Image: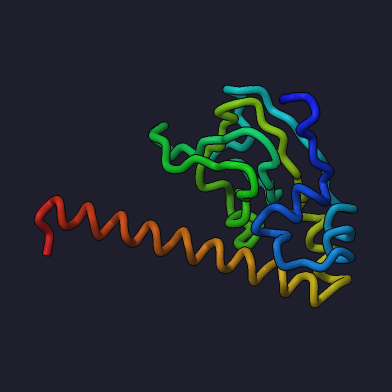
Length: 156
């Protein structure tokens, strides 16, 4: 990580999709349950099929999402989150995420988020609505990719 570029957890959340619509007080509350974690380039952050419900937000660096066959599916940059599917459906991880460069992440544990959601209904609605929008964007993108593949293959 480069010196002098460190953001606080609150600043990192505010700059992310997860925290973009939260008030200063809500950001402070969310940051209070967060943890800062770092991974070196090449290190696996989460592994496909692992059981976990933690949500991560990239503060610095880049990570790559790979499918079961090892093919890259997406690249995650600062401000983007991953782990939302396991958080929502409580199923094992659907992909592996590896640090492409040294990365600094905000980790929000599933247990801490569940407690926060129970304690603060309005905050939970805002965060879950944002996660819902993120999932919709990814589904739309996947649909477009499938459509393009079907067109190339001649499927009508």
